[in-house]
Image 1 (tube, rainbow, N blue to C red):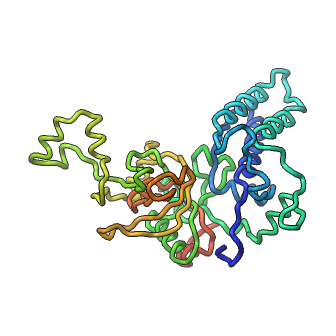
Image 2 (image 1 turned 60 degrees about the horizontal axis):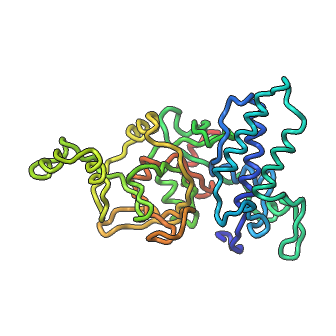
Image 3 (image 1 turned 30 degrees about the vertical axis):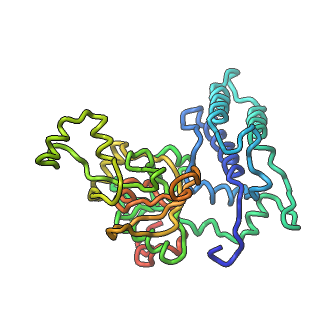
Length: 333
């Protein structure tokens, strides 16, 4: 659409299915000594589209198991049990049939993958359809910001969902924000992976904030007197009670790193940053499109404050042309 083409609705579950297959192969080859679970990174999409292709959503919705929406708890458990059994090698070698059996489970839940299909008067394979979209999958770059690796170099981000061991370009925190701002201001969207388990991530209220921590050291007078009488649960509720703009913490590179190292920041969920907004006090937010549901105050969108973004972003993915030239020049491959 950015390049003037029509809107597209591509099957997510075709991508997911191919990831399951490659994860299973990797798990068995590593004797079961690695992670096998649902979930992945934004980089899974160009990985699958380049290697296997894509299919329109209407031809492969991936809902063959009696649900109207995607619910993968059962299939995740079935597939994990299956690959664990294979990896144990009860006959001292891996059978020649296990991949066929694994594909049979995927077929049952998501549907068989067509070798060819008709779409808008043309015949495609998944690979030829992906190629027809005119997207160069090598044009996308994943970016993060941590101090346990050198800046301006790629490193394999140490989160379980990075199962393909993809490289992420490491930049200072302020430059990661500059990349997002430049992308949005120039017509690009940004894939955003973040921690959404924070209590300041108020999905149904449509905002994500990092409130200043309240404790005896930050309060005084009658507010302090009231605070010390609250139990732990009430203090938590008070801290994250959001009814308008509020004071938020200052997020530094050091604090962000501390949160990641302690695993207070976790790699939870992927969304899309589509815009920039301000509240009535002039505070900047990112407008984020989420996949959970449209039955929410902003019809499926949430406004993420800059402090929340700086603290809880795990990584982003953007088109390389969305990166400011001054920053891109520093990248070392």
